[in-house]
Structures are given as structure tokens and as C-alpha cells.
Image 1 (tube, rainbow, N blue to C red):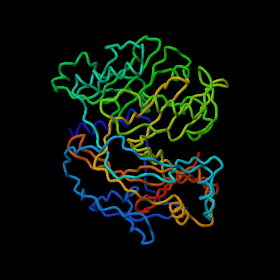
Image 2: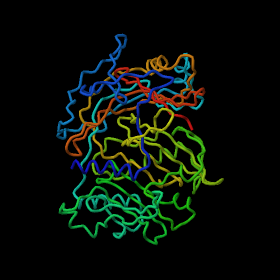
Image 3: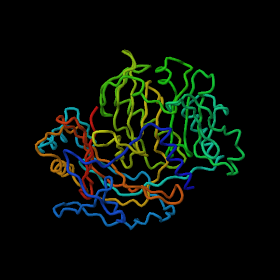
Image 4: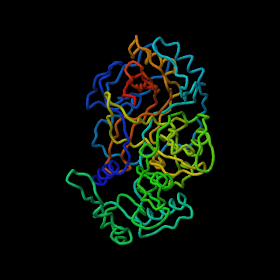
Length: 478
């Protein structure tokens, strides 16, 4: 099983688009923090924001200091599955308007609210939580195939399932390439095994199976589709491509369909906007606002049949508009899961003036080129459970978080605040022997995206909403 987990992560790196997360650069315009000791126990209220030290809670704060969590510093602990938390408990909230948030921001001496600032920030909320995300083990092969085919029917209604296009990865099944003298891939020399050819070996356990792969690229079908997933569907890897945008980009209705279609590689980027934007775009079958498209996307993903009762739902964090031609747009959604109306703070890329990346499970992408369908996506976030949840009635206010960011950033520079969001963040995962025993510690934080016109850098600042720990990353704006 340990080898299986390692291969799952490795395969995700190979077949997915570049999903990214926090690195730890030295910062030219913001102060840094020191390392914490390797054997220090994780406190669910304290974030390392990429391995920074714990910070003492100031005596002047009015929120409740949470109790210390159990010592899980021993990385060899084998975690038995625990009882999950309650699903769907109420968490009423009242949010700041853009104008209210901008007023707070503009009070800070070195911060100015952008005219197009995106705000998703609670003025009041019933509770915030610390907890662990736990995972679901793969289904037995027979159940996994049934689950995969049921999902296929939802995603591709009316599209015939072809057993000749149904493959798997794992055991003796892998993909091999031929390369030229420069190391560039020229063609596929060997593709994955077909499930029908190895069915008995898979069911008996003689052959290891990590991923289901449905790919029509080697057929002469007109409307090819692609689906890659680990069972049950919605687990850590789920890649869907219906091929509409793919075929338009290649101007070929018989074109092969890639595992994951990326509008940025095929169409001209126009702009990014918040998911509540009223801006209208032209898609294949009509006009739609960004706001309505984002809502449609979330509903579509949330309604995909799920093997378990869902803890997490889909959240669109940002929308990118691309131009296919002067009469057609394509929308790309940057997404993350959310719990209790609070989205996870999936980060796209950080570095010291250049992109520094690592695999990140909780950042997704998807695109629409029609008003009434999702053409493809990476990441459904449907199969994780919340365990060992602790709720807190009080947390660091937005005003206090802004004060911390203002104090930490360089005083004589004016930073334009482009977004303010309240999110859940992660500490480093704690690995058990089985897949379902891996836990990811989660804590609440304020996340703010700033831009400095002087150096052309984008800054993402985090303030732990329970402890006031602070961390800032930056990236060259392109």
C-alpha cells in the first residue's frame, strides 16, 4: 500500500496540469519568520504556513485561545479511521460588502483597496473550526468499475461506453514513449492495459490497480471523450474532458482528446475576474454572465453522484476569460473545496520572482465553452471526510488581520489589495499506513492578495484566524 500511495502521487504529477502550493522564499517587501523544530507537535490552531515557527498569542487579543491538540509529532503513528464529524451543521454568516471591506483596508497607511477587489469575508459567522481531512480507500475492483461507469453516464449522457477504450494504470500497466535525440517525446510506444484483458487478475488482486482510464484517442470516433479517476470517483484524482473546446482549438472534429484541456495553452487570455462578476461572455449557445456560469459550474460538480455523504462542496475562487475568436469565449475556473461555507485556500504558485511549485491536492481547474454544460475539469473534491473537528465561536477579526498585514509589509510602499477571503489552510499531512489513515490538519485563516506596482510583484498574505500567525509569499506578476 505504501508503494501504491507513492505511485498515485507520482502519476498525479505526470498526468495533471501544474498544480502548485506554498514554497518559502525570502521576501523583499515583507518580513519572514524562523523555522520551527522538526519534532514539534502540531497544534491545530497554529499554522506553520510552510514550516514557520509557532507565534505566541498577543495578550491584547479578545478571541478564545484554543486548547492544544493531541501530540501527533510521531510521524510513524498508524491512524485508525475515526468517526467523522456531523455533515451539514448550520453555520450562518453575514459577509462584508465590497464597500465595507474597502473602508477598513483604506484606513491602513500602506494598503489601498483595488477598484475591482474580490471580497468573501464574514463580518460575523457562527463558528470556525480546526479539523483533519481524511480520505476514502479505493473500492474493490468490481465495485470500482460499477462506480466509474455510473459516473461516466452522468458526465457523458448518451455517449456509448466502449470496453475497448477502458484501461487501468498499476501493476504491469503503464505508458511508455519514444523520444528523439533531443529527448522530446515523438510517440507512444506502449499504452496502458485494457481492463477487459486483465479483469480476472485485477479482481483477484494479482494485478495492482491505481487508476481507471477511459480514452478514445486511438479510435476513429467523431466526438472523443476522456475520463481518468481513482475509485470512488471524486477521490484525489479526477480528470474529465468532453472534448468540445479541444476540437475547436484543433479545428478538427476527430481530434484526439487530451487528459486535461487547458484554455491557457490554446486560446488568448483576456482577463481574470471574481466569481461574482456580472460581466457577460459569449459562449457557443448564447451569452451568460461570469456569475451565472460560476454558479452553474459549482452546481454541476456538486451534483455528480457521490459514493459517500459529502462533507465538501465545490467553490469557484477565480474565473479567467479567454478569447477563442471575436464571437466566442471560453471560461476557465480556478476552484477549491469548501466546508461549512468556508473555501479552502488553495494556492496556485509562489516563489522568489519565479514560479516555485509542488503537487497540491486541493486546487482544481475546469472550463466551460457552452452555457449549459461543463466541458472538462480537474478535481471534484467529493471523497474526503472531516474528522476530529473542534469549533470556535470567536476568531481574529478582519480589521485586526489587516492591521497585522499592514504592520508586516514595508511601510513606505502602497500595496493594492486585490482580494480578501476567509479560508481554510493546511499543515503538512500526517501519513498512516493505509490511504484512509492519512490526515491533513486544517485551520482557518485570512487570505489577502496584494499587488506592488513598484516591483511588479503579487503578494499573498495569510493571518491565522486563531493565533495571529502571519506568512507572506510573493510571485512576479506576468
